[in-house]
Amino acid sequence: MSKRALQARSLPDNTCARWRACLPAERTQTSHDPDLELLAALVVILHRSSLLPWDKFKAIMDTAGRHGLMNKLAVTADYRTTMAYFTRGQQDPAVNVRAAPLGEPSKFPVHEAAELAAPTAVGPGYSREKALEAIRARYESCAAVTRYTQPRAMADATIRTLCQRLLYEGRPEWIVLMTLANLVMNYRMRLSREPPMTASRGQWQAIATEEMRREEQASDPSPPMTEIAETLGMHLCFVTATIARFWGLEINQDTPDFDALEAQLKTRYGYWDDDIEHRSYFIH
Image (cartoon, rainbow, N blue to C red; front, side, top):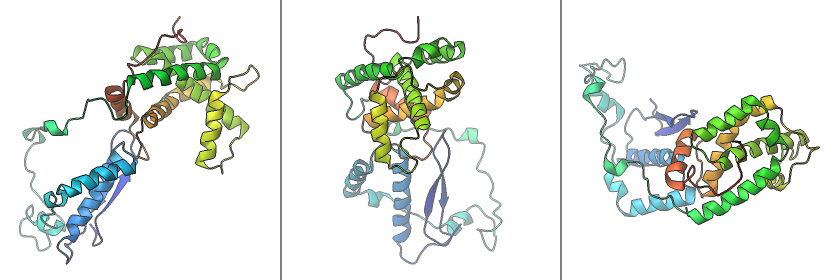
């Protein structure tokens, strides 16, 4: 507990959203301060938990504010007052709290309101026509980037099994091929030391785009089979993030839950459903 304003800080976790909230120990003199502090903390948590860019998120919050959000949000009591309800005659209820449990957790089942269920409608900006056009381009560019590495990888029993497992789980081939292409491209960039570590994000993106468009040559360095096997899952996560950004989504977490992100793309952006006719790269 702190006498300072309410603060919220995210904690690293790739499986869920975890936050540490520091609550003020006492209510401030100005009656509306706790309400504003709570709203500020909730806005931070909501934005970091969303997939919206800040400008779109802010527009939604501004609309909610005009519709009376502040009138629906209030801090009813400070920490010391609230804890007093769970203590028995202690001089300072905030110290050495001995609160009696309300009951077994099984007695308080979770009931999700229909309004809070995850949406299943088509995601903002999605169109199947746009998706198929992009997939067609990905097959072309990723096949070129992996022209020599892909057949070598398929000759390795371990990598072949890994790739086929990803397909059997339900992914279309373009996702696996894009994952391999991303791995090959990053390997070449790492060996060439281009761009330098001091390069800006824009420089990194420009060189990565150029590498993604360049056809692999027989003389190009190719990642060892052990590296492909060890890092394929990581690069699969990178592809998931790339596709999210393609649809205008923003990853606001320092440690995203990639399983949740993939589930969102599958449900609302046809991630595992959209594909075109193509020759098989991984199943023969």
